[in-house]
Length: 223
Image 1 (tube, rainbow, N blue to C red):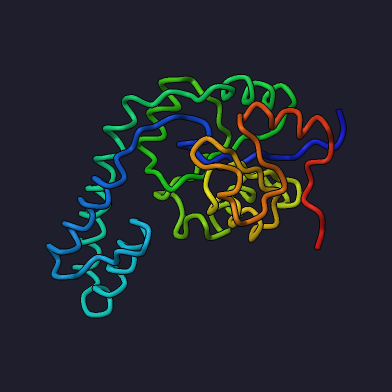
Image 2: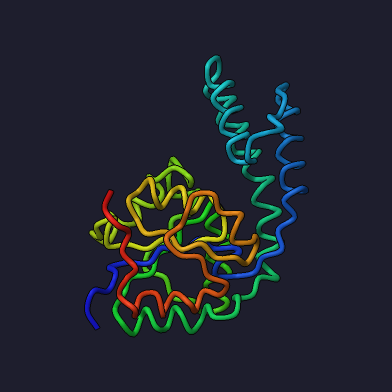
């Protein structure tokens, strides 16, 4: 089979596995830490971005205090993630899709805003293959920043144009396009119309990725 991608990058929760993370509890825990340092949480930002914004504000006057804050806030977030990871299960089609990619020598990467401890636990428990794992603990800038994806491609010397990014959130599509990769949107957590970044493909199950790749028309058109 010719014209295969060099690498497929996946988001994690909602894409490969089902994890019931209590995002409200996560945000509330992080906000409590923010307030304990005398700051007010940004109600409009994603939780991680809220934490980083407060860290930057604190760092302007006290780097050590800013580091302590970031450690405490991320610990609060990680506690919620680790608890949820104990109940995580692969989504339908995950095992078959990853096995097919392995069979055809296509590299598998996971790029996620989750913590490494939680993701690593799920991968180990369910024996899911992965060549490159980049969590928020491994990079300075996470999705939707394209650097998260580009670092994964660099790890295996894969050109972005030879990569596919698969995810269930608009930030995955935005990151893919910013990195110059093909975007495949998965409707596990939102309907097709919920992706305003115009992905190249929208699928209901990750196993549909096999047909996209095998069909040969997966590559993002050059602009």
